[in-house]
Length: 223
Length: 216
Image 1 (tube, rainbow over the protein chains, first blue to last red):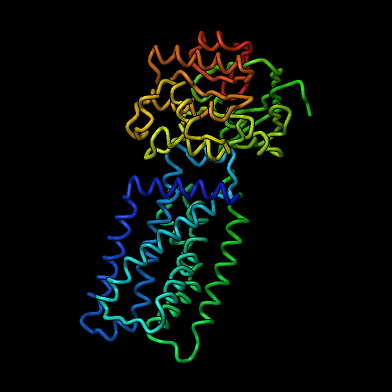
Image 2 (image 1 turned 60 degrees about the vertical axis):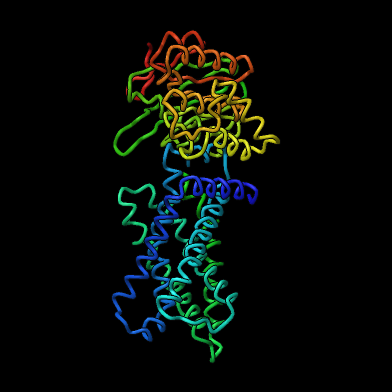
């Protein structure tokens, strides 16, 4: 399963690299979202810095809807998903490749947004950059796993662009809350030692939804 | 489970919404024989091919492919059957060579790069291997799709309108490839409107009208 997932992930990254359309659209969309938050709140730099973690994750969440939807569009074109199913390809490997691919894309986006956010919002980093990287990775994984399953489900629907956020947003509220809190603690300091609890919640969320994704995805892609 | 038949359709039906695409179809194809599917557009030919390929499941009835139950032993059936569909199953932004390499790697082949080059040469696309599929004509896509099917080395090849979108030279080439497939021991189920071409390649014929078997 892992070797198949690796082949499929390579294929997706190659497709992404050859077109780069999704990547460019995501970066500009997320940057625009960050800028809009700063315009909406005005020149109050204290307020911007205090809620920077929240704005970062909202920008990532909105961008993830574009990213997740696109990840199955390439499989819809020429019915490539049927082609993969009939090879046959392990559906769990397909889930892993898509979810890891979406995580990598979101993480890359987060790393692009980070310096912009620091410059725009006047944010300083209180804990180590590695802690921030860990929180970002866990948060991106938490969006990607259920997002990949719902994206595959919504892909069959006519109103897929509307359906995906409707299904995904309510589900990932706990993960979003944990990611925002953990990011804020990394940025502003953690005098009460709360970071571990939020990271624990994010990890548990990931464990559940990556496990559910692996278990349910074969039913999602078959008739 | 039958072992003497390549294909057993026992009262097979398939419904899409309220419409029956196939209705109570029964048929047996002996091993070593090839089947020509004929019928007008919407008669159920493509649905039957997709059922045999396990791309979809019957609403009712029992379907055996190469002695295996098409529902319960779906994965095993998929390992021995390949479908040339109306859809090419090709990634538009990958080159022809890359499309085949991805497939060959999934099939666990030892030298996917070399095998892909050989397959491209076999279908007359040797000089176009590095070109993205997006820039291919319909005929070139069909050739690449048949290369994809050949890569799977199936025991049963399902060909849905293989001559469509091909020029006269392409049709001759496709006839040669289908004949080669048959000589290599692959059973063929072929759906086409070009009955003359089909009859020259298949011993058996199944004519469908609105999802039902009728005498041609």
